Image (cartoon, rainbow, N blue to C red; front, side):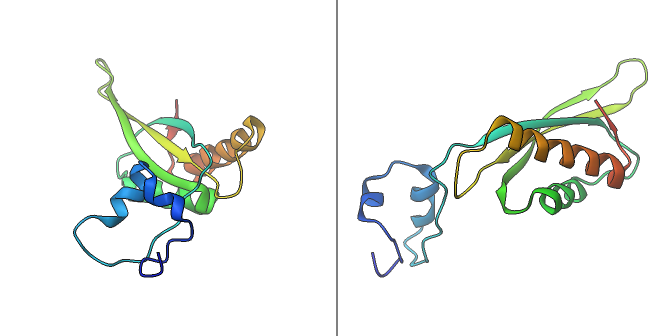
Length: 126
């Protein structure tokens, strides 16, 4: 426990992949704590502008929501058959280290994220 800086012996019986993945490859690394609270998933879909970069999206999302953003991942692509416009849908995984989010808390954060995406990336939200 001291070698890896693991705070609780019960973690050794954990089957959580967030714990197990930290100890692959026979390397000694410091344990990175993870939340025991459930994640909340929110999607955002928009039509792509000409010079869209997913990294810019990631920066905006993390800039608005901060450390509670665990992951941002592309979950769907759509190309309109007539206009040929392309749309992406990204799933944002929110998780707190301190609590389970209420619907109103996460909806407020998601609304702020959506507005900032629209403003800074010049996208048309769907």
